[in-house]
Image (cartoon, rainbow, N blue to C red; front, side, top):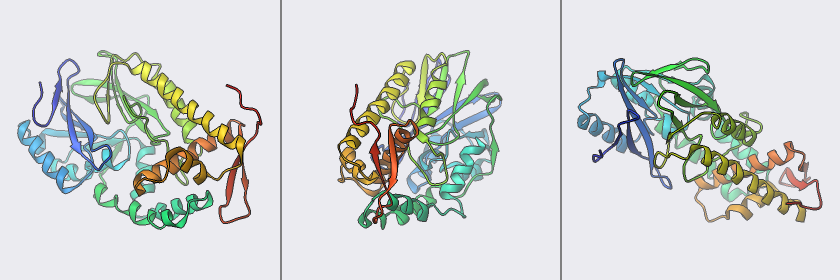
Length: 335
């Protein structure tokens, strides 16, 4: 049954609620579960004036009072999932749950002591990004702070434990690559996985290299997919797009997608050594806004470092303005 705001998945006991966010995705899925313990909200979206209005309308339509919300569960630290948690906590007094690793990453990216607005441009400069892009990054990164303010008070969720949502016990499953400490939640009885951005049905989650975070994010992402693939899942509820019933197949296709991208980069490097930005331009072009260019550059570096980790490429100093470039270690590419 569909309303103006939400879709009810009765067999899974889940209400899917689309929350507004910036293009290109435009919407993030929040999920609501009712149980004897109270109402749980998963991933309430970014905090903006529009989403504050949306949540007020959602609560009215669902006939919920603020005190009915007893827990807010976060799959990961990105503003489109984490952002409204502190604001909603101030309205409802609900407990907020996420992994300690994910909270650490939120502090790294958006906390008061964050230096990512300087560290990320410095990293990109080392890999050849020109000044026309670099000078846009600090303000772009700081623009997310309002979407995550205030930070919530958090209770940490650990693997090997369980969390009660909708009157049922859910197993947390940790993965990384897209977001360190990302938690998916599995209901064994119903064979349901709430998977955030760990597995998306139509697009590939961005895999980003971030200063002082995971050194090999693509390896972490693939390891996480293999862990998730061990679960018997009949229906998956993702952070973006529609719930889907081909979880195993989607995991297989995502792993294949990234291996194909590694192979393409390896072929490029066999032709001539390249900086990270030169590879990024070839793969993604430059007709992007700063948000998408940041993702493209971080994803390019994640893949190049995976080639280095696997012994398929080397990173070497250039002696020029760009600190590093990459070259293939094999001269003949084999399919």
